[in-house]
Image 1 (cartoon, rainbow, N blue to C red):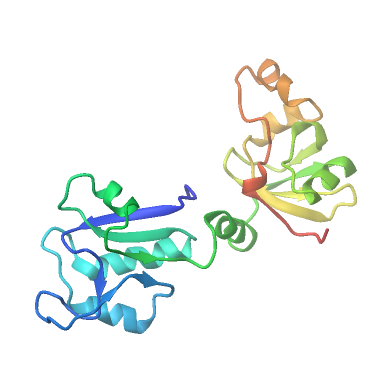
Image 2 (cartoon, rainbow, N blue to C red):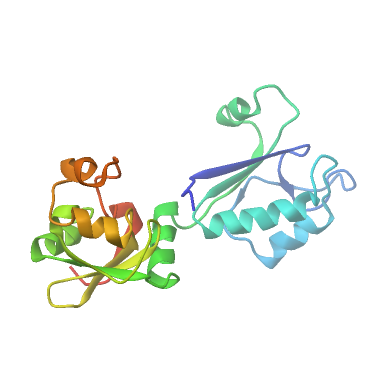
Length: 211
């Protein structure tokens, strides 16, 4: 997941219509979509695009995925010079607007979908920092539990053994164990390479314990 804010699809049509505008002169243009409803999907059923694969149906399917990830999607006409600049300047296009941000959706994904591969135990100071919206730094880590790689989801356990948070680790269990208790500026000296300052960045972390 790249947590993109916006996806732009350039086509030979300038957006979504209530019907195929090539066949129906009364088709109405839709500038903004807040939800992919059955009615919206039905509108795309007959709108084909000579330059695209699958026409409007494929674009609506892409919009559904993007909105589900908290990403805006725009369908605009690409048969002009500088099409992105035209969009910025207000050219006609259809915007699909999600109800959540990419970061919020990513946190929801981390909390509810991913199964932790291991755990990281932290001290009380780290717990307070996490509750205050901070990232997890090596200095607050007391132990790495289980086997996990960089990019795996881990449980973050407080001194009492309860799961305080869950997040995506920037280090493997072995590297986390080597840098735990140290300052971020010492990471390169200990590991031989310069990784992230944080073991778990706040954007990759969701709290499971009430503040």
